[in-house]
Length: 489
Image (cartoon, rainbow, N blue to C red; front, side, top):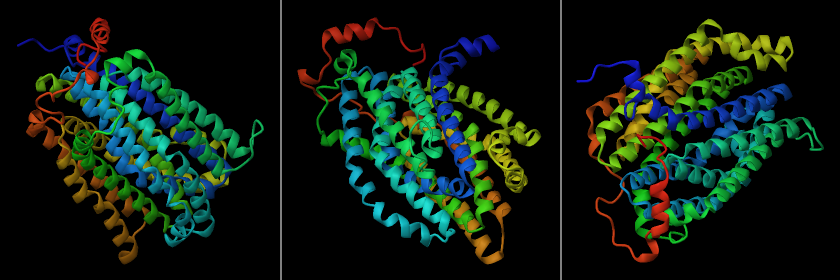
């Protein structure tokens, strides 16, 4: 047995170097969105408390409605990874196009919710000004729904191949555009109208469609079209669609349940008043500094698991997952310590655009909530990485079952505490913390059990294909001549 050392951990196959080579662009991509969300919330807070209070609930309701198709098309990366690992790239274009058709099919359903938005937010019991702003924000975001799904599908394609640098570049440009348009459209700069919260929503819509355009330009390259069958696969294939639905739907439903539970929790907290809602928004916004980068690590782990299982190398898949886990725990633990020791560091930017009186009312509550974030940060990292790993193998039914059981619990506990026992914000956040800890422990246990090692989402035997769906010899030669993204992937 080889003696362990930092150098060995770093250089071995699917060790630190290989995992980070794939994960860093994804982490940077999520950091772009973290900065964008952070800046968006900061600008809206500078604009008014009402806008800041309305943005998160409305945005969550919008995203909740997209969760099922979003989770479904995101799962495309597992198919791409396993087909690529199994040496069957000609099947990748076909499954990509099925994700595109499913994204487009979701459009009428989302747009049909626009007329119901005003009265729906009023029924939730929020203050009238907040409910009105929520409706405007939600209605505007719906025009970018299909753009969100399409850009997610294209990103999943590149992630599954290990080309995460492309995702980083596209998402970076889109996020920078979003931030610039946020500032201009919220406050009326550079010739744009001062539309407040509606301007923030339009900035998001434009950024999402710009990402679709950028991914489209990259996919037009002949090397992608030929090697991965993007031209030949541009058709509806019932068998492939059913396979994507079979494995992707549980993932989408799980995503829907977790997001719906989080959304309902925010809506329940909204009944405690504007200050409680704004403080909760700020705490969750700051929590993105942990959640989004580790989500990038989880996506990298899922991709490597898919590729290595496609190659018949479950041990390397496990090694990569544990490597991602220790990196994530180190990062989450460091931020958790900072949340406790220097919480004001994370509130400096928010304080700059507010009067001292407004900020003082929020500071103490937000700092208290950050202590809860610190308490569950490590378990949240555990949840994200191990759940992603087993999903990369195809263990989506277990993930769905866990979500069905656990997702309603924090919401139910919060609602019962508020309405029957007069509990407040601390009770709600205690329920969130316990739920996050349970999820982390459950997914760690499932991963250690190892059932995922024998799972696959692709066909166990290659289906018969005609010449039109096979990669051209020149494309195969080009692919063989290119260096791999990493020795692991």
